[in-house]
Image (cartoon, rainbow over the protein chains, first blue to last red):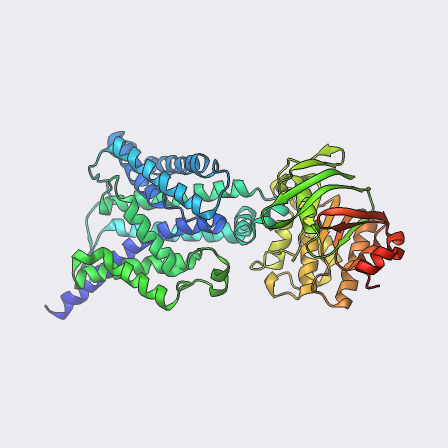
Length: 300
Length: 237
């Protein structure tokens, strides 16, 4: 193997890793939004991604809605399911503790997965790539145009959320709930509404992740759990609750997975990133960007 | 303005209160004194809606608010400066102030809001100077001022203050009590809970003594200051 093709291969794996990592980062951001407001780990986060992909497939491939219309409609539908989940699984719990709520999210994820199997069956579905499938050749690496869409949407989401949390009063109110829910109520913030909003935002971001990844990786009803595990791993790796951490953690998970599968054994693809996660947690339990002082006061 | 009748509340780990009745007249300062764990904070949390009540009634400006949630009670005009200040420590001072006026942001009274922020900074010049600082880095006294300033942003008719002197140096305590008196002169009714009984009785018109969840004594503050039981238990003999 000559040097040029090795460099090309390396670039290929890195770009693939960053793309997969961007998906994990989006899932991790979804985890963090709900976790920050409620301390709940929403284990149905992966189902939002799965639904995003499959709803989009139905709208675009079956009902022939153009991509640009099907995209927002899908996000709205999945957001609606996120809200429904909040009303049906989270609010009715009479004595909410973090643990019972997390178990409720597991139940919700199973129901969503079961319903998806009834609707879409067990087949994998493809979706039209947004800008075709002609690879762009850069330095010996063949890069799918869809990769840029995935990375681009991560950038847009991060920019949007940064603006939302730093500049708008609703965003600040959400941060206030995560810092001190009682004090937030005492300035007039309706915490229940903020919880609802956090589910809506997470579902919307999950849907975007699902829509953008389907042209690369296909989508079936059973993909949610693994996406949730990887996304959760990314969130923990970066430091649970930290948005920069979610991005760093997601990209690291993606890169380790891609490089590991490329240069070592591809059969252990899912193991590399999770092994890296374990190592980081042994050395630094609060995650890469997590705040050690804050983590001491958290229950998880 | 505030009428509490036979209020009972108990909740897992916090001290319970039993059969409490109390009245706060409009424009006055009422103090509640009592030892640690007597239920003073529980009473304030019950009024502001942070905890649920078992029985009794709470009427504010003629309306029953016993079943309202905390965020609605703020909107009605009761602001609670909770024990331990409870500022948003990781946010800037100005963010804390803005969040204090959360209800007004939503009603889109932007101009009024700016004017109100200016007034609060005028009252607490130190907060104005430090508006871009992270709130957690302020000194204890400044944090207490921020907690009060944040509560004022909601334009309360009644201000509930829980241990505003806690952990502060005597000089700073003096400042805080001066501010409380000034707020009262400007028209805010005040219900003050304090372990520092002497200071609390000096600025109040009327006072209650709370012991193990029950009101054991009440009267004009000046009378309580000379009461032998109060002297022995709360004023150091």
